Amino acid sequence: MYYALILISFIISIVAVRLVYRKTQKKMISIFFTLLINILFLGTAFTISYQMDIEKWNIGTGNWKIVYLLIAIPIITWFNAFLLQFVKVEDTTK
Image (cartoon, rainbow, N blue to C red):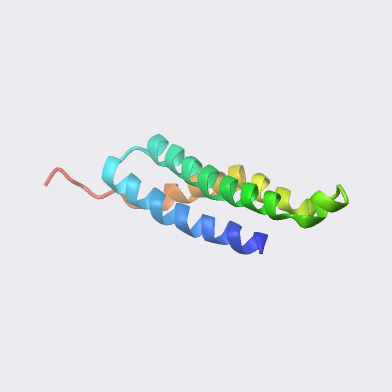
């Protein structure tokens, strides 16, 4: 389940970073926007999953794989920044 959430976040952030980059033509704004999307999406998924974990409430130990959601935030942002180098810049001066 966590891997699917990470993959969905990656796909959403790729589409969003491409749209923002084509509109603003600035890489730093696009990278910041993808970081914001990843924090909102994966942070919310982490919070909801953490609150719904029954083992944590009963025994005191929960599912440790939930941390993958938080670790994936900078990794996905880094991948998006790397892939942003290959997006063609459209010439808008015509």
